[in-house]
Length: 361
Length: 182
Ligand code: SF4
Image 1 (tube, each protein chain N blue to C red):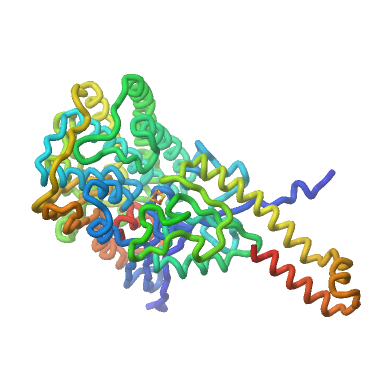
Image 2: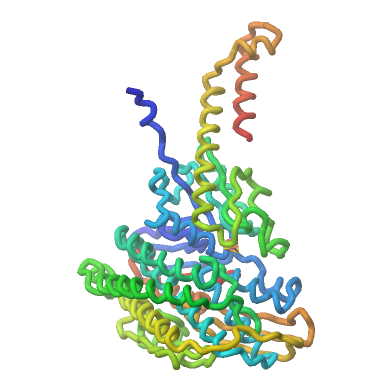
């Protein structure tokens, strides 16, 4: 038995720019207790959406819940409103939404992988990943006009069409991107030291994952076949070659590999989608006011995102409820920490790719 | 050879998120990555306020982040500059007027450079940081001048030519603090 030492980690920490705070109680490097505090960035978006903004504007406000999965949040809200008001969205708009949401997934996964590499001490790999990520950002800028916070989806369709030149350039750059992603996957998969460092650390067993309701890549890395893209019909994923990716080990390495595989799958989907892009309008006019309740499940890059909506024929919504992926993953994080070496904490936290801005809202 | 030229210090940045949506944070990260690469100005991102010269703040100030922001600012050594990145940090942006938000960084700490945009583009952030470097240089000079207490002649004149050393020193110190404040 050693001395009990209290170690605060965050809210401003070198390894973790996110405003989260852990207080670890350790005994001889082993963690015996942990407290988590996530409320540093609470802004009160849900309340503002129910009092300040009209239902047509809320889509742009919820995009500001999180800059990384901006499109997922807008998509969740917009889909919910469309279900409520029974709007028939043109097929082309759905395809364009799918394109942007998959691009978003690629850049988010690359960011997570790069960050994980940096925390493990692979500065060079981090730089490589980020250089390749810039390519995706360029593509997003081409398609939507902004690098981050592109307000693309709107109630009834999308805000911007895909022109022929953009499509041609998109294909060219995507080829390049695919090659680089393949290379990155190869490095992450086969590097000997990475394996030593990440295999068998922070293992979530399938039972644990099921019991504590883990979502997203961590769940799929533990062999749980859960993916909202597979289960909830909000965009035509099946038509463009979606594959469910699962792994068995449930450690940091497996989580990273799930992300790498999903990146490649997303790129494949984008190629198929560009080939089969339907003709037609990108937007339909919206009439009427929302009435009733609706809920929507979306697969954000980090996991399942849940939107609940209630309206009563008013311009302003009665209730908007957002449940974000990181919120579902915090209990298992806490469970994992107890009994773990303190040195493994940063890598484990980052391997969940936490998004505190979403969690606190 | 003029060695002084080579003895300039590399400015280090401290990045604090006071409630942003992560959009601007990611763009700051992109600035450090190979494409934009602000490391070529000698700028490194460090998490330690005691070693930093430039404070990059993103996001509207939430009520809980406020204390930490002020503390981080106080912990940074002089001279220091503050850059507000993104419309949220400048004025509050979409979050303006929400119940847990205090609209903009400049309500609590003095801001030197405002970088607009939602999200602020990396090019703009680099412009902002380069501008901050100029301000930093100026602040450094101001500090050095007053520290050395040069210009005592002028001070003597101001004090009515009484050669009271204590008064001169007091006046010099006062000026030093004044120049720090802005
Ligand atoms: S300015 Fe925009 S991108 Fe930046 S923190 Fe605010 S909402 Fe997010």
